[in-house]
Image (tube, rainbow, N blue to C red; front, side):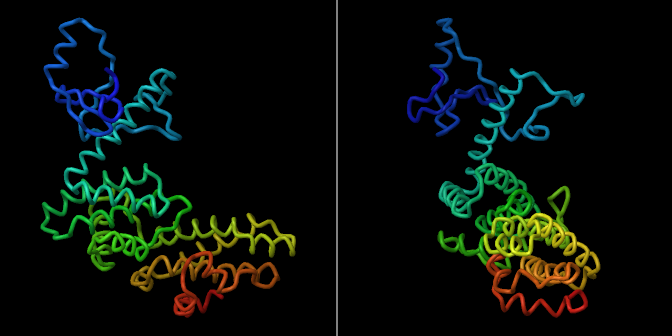
Length: 315
């Protein structure tokens, strides 16, 4: 028997030697599994993986041996299967700590924010570390607050083109009935960044991540496409110049001076200022107005205007 008779999911053998469904978690009677062995029926070879283990792949999902050599195709397929099952088992392991209701809401929230399932699994794995750390160090964060903070941190690192900020995360969790606040989520994120992540995100690194995503969003904006066509400038080159100029301006800022500023809004303001600086160097009129910047970055215009005095020497 390879599939679960209840839901049709793939059956696996856990580290305790039990036959269980990888989809619904149903554990089958041990006697039934032993009877199969006694009748000498052919039992499918299913890779076993201990709960809580971590299987790492190389770049682009290619598995390599300890000498950094690519393993053969048969092993590639097997390792990919094990990795997929490993993610599922860790999701169920996480559900034991956060509860089924919060787990279901978490997956719904991830979907509503247009984030991938793999990112959700990464956030759940981070949740287990943060949950244990907070319990051992007497931080009284609620489970929804910890899960919101983990999702925010993970989206910043692996969110690709999707820009997710603190306010958006908070609003979605509130929508699903979880009592969370921006201050507590931000506090939890700070602890994760300083105490748990192997490579913590500095303020400037976070601003660079947002800048990169704003440029990717701008690349698909039809208004900017039309404007660059009129003056015969390649949009990719133009946005690359903006990104490099923004990074140059950012490096000249004192860390203490900008640490208290919202990195999302700061990055949007920096994007706007850098575009004006690039346009001046190219001898053309600025192509991206405050309104268009607000549309691309999803930041109110008044927030941009409040941050502009910080860049008075850069314009």
